[in-house]
Image (cartoon, rainbow, N blue to C red; front, side, top):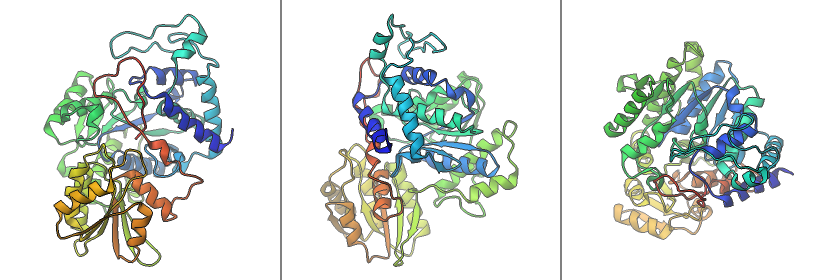
Length: 466
């Protein structure tokens, strides 16, 4: 197997869909030797700011001299972005090796029934346990790991092999039933709660908060920047029920850094959350104050209010704001930091997002708007985006483009361009600008669709991952 073949194998895993619950991940991790048992984690969930908070924590602890694993999703361009050690992407040959090893488990090599030889029988959401099949072959027929489950265990195995001192561990979707939730961390971090993925996480902030709070473990401290009262009440109640120390970031803790870690006031909140987490864990992992400041000052997280200076002088702001809360944060940043210039807006959004409200939030900021399709089967039509943008800003010059490449060509002479609405779109922009080249596009591995909010019944659900 070579690297393209390994990536194709991961593509093919999407055909098997997903089963909400942790049984598959527990089984696959056990077959891999339970690497999570040899690692320490900070588990991060939330609606927005997960990746930025993870990047800040990683930078602080790496600056302090630790060997730090970082697991995040989605990737902007290369699949290898998801699994990093000291901000070095997992090498291609390691991806190949891990895929080959886990493929052997998938095909039945070494499979043992749940509950035997160290494989835990994991309680299902309905209160039952996995029934141990009587024949290995029958067991294999019922055990088909999905894309995200395989990638999660790949990351665990790689981090354990690399002897990471600490792993910054981001949830994929939700928390309670997310494959990452098989670990017991040193701390559980919940950035915030807002509306996103309502089809799968619930249609109220309380329901969404309950899914995110599913990462809280008995006796493990919880730190959150959530300020929505209904959501906060759910997180605090869950922490209390599980005997977990609870800490909420207060406005007084949001201090201006000597150098902003990342652009935007909302990143100051994420920074305060990261700092509070480091403080809570000082006894387990001491970090000197000067290392904290140095780590925070040099954090890097592409695609989130990333300001790019192009060779011909154009400034381009890239931000993956893909929900209303993200669009509002972008609006506030533009109004505060770029008050003297109106950006040309290049906007593409996925159909299953609240694209109308995203358009209505961002369109009034621009004198010129180019809407584009996102390179995804879930894209909203550029013409539909343009129609809403015209209604939200009747004085703007609004046009729908056939592709992002066409929009970037039309904006080549503009001084300031903001590209936003989807991380997919930001990743494609980085490729087109030559800032993140990769052999062949691997962005399609991010594709996903989902199931209803209620716990999934037995069986498979065709999915594409965020």
